[in-house]
Image 1 (cartoon, protein in one colour):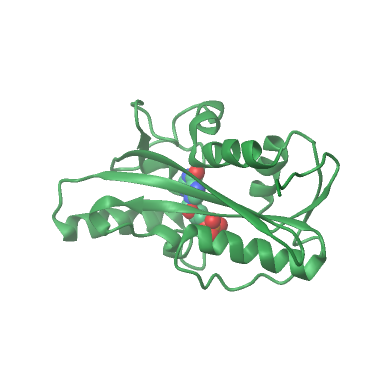
Image 2 (tube, protein in one colour; image 1 turned 60 degrees about the vertical axis):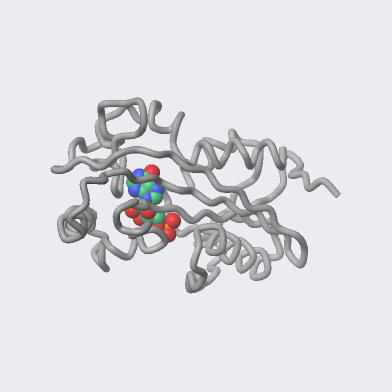
Length: 199
Ligand code: IMP
């Protein structure tokens, strides 16, 4: 059975991050009625899985069961080749409780120095999952490769953007026009796959 999302479907977005909801709303182009897990007062589950896909599915299933609505969830992060994929699913946690990404970026730089590797390649991953209450789920993954630069450059974007230069570019995600980043990012690539699968 092909899974389809009909226009106007009420979708719960399983994120408590207003920035992400805004980004999702823009990408979904007003096709759906979006409510957030925060607005519905749904608790946030612990992200106990070991992969981006696993955690996106876990969050979508949890929100679908708790709300009785179709749920959309994402999980994303930065993976560094020389660090065996770290910080990976721990990307948000490396910034500590105060969500300090200068700290997280310094940690990446220090770990790379400790590893003594010349390899500065890295990639961002975005997993997106849609789950139906009591029913099936669909999950897709998008990725963008690039290289890391230190010190961080640019104050656009968020998270690890200032140290990431995407393939084919000279500027970091923190320096590039947001529209350029949004057109090529891991999240855009995951959304293209999700649209192809569901719309
Ligand atoms: P999540 O909310 O558990 O998916 O955490 C993802 C973390 O990965 C965020 O806190 C960011 O630090 C990082 N991350 C994900 N996508 C991006 C991006 O596009 N730019 C910079 N950092 C990102």
